Length: 145
Image (cartoon, rainbow, N blue to C red; front, side, top):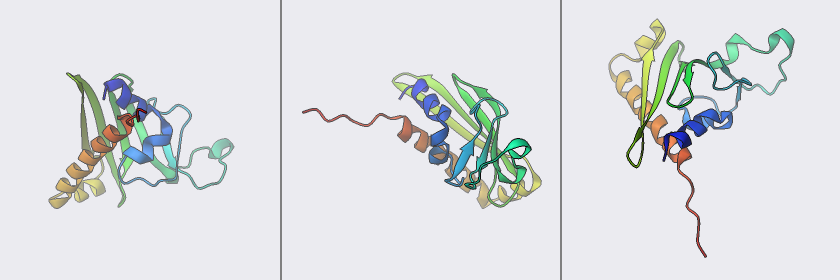
């Protein structure tokens, strides 16, 4: 799959929960997704209005950097508290593309989770993000009759 196909999956706000590991399935992305500063929140089913359009308690992720041709860097709230920076970089390669996903803890509580065995689990989750992006970016085969 091409870099454009992978970036198209990332740009589609409806696929975020499909490729990002360990996020709730009911999410609401900001209208400017995935531009820098846009936010992903849990979807409570309630219509948010006025100054309550964004609730800090519901924030799941915040985009730190978006380069449409190759990179998405975001802060993700970890399940047990704290924030982790997730970097997704896509590079063209002959016959397809290379997807690099990395995670770095940003807060003390997240660093505690990444100590020892937690680091291996984080690396496995990063690999799973890349696998899911590949699966979503790969076109379904067409049956020929």
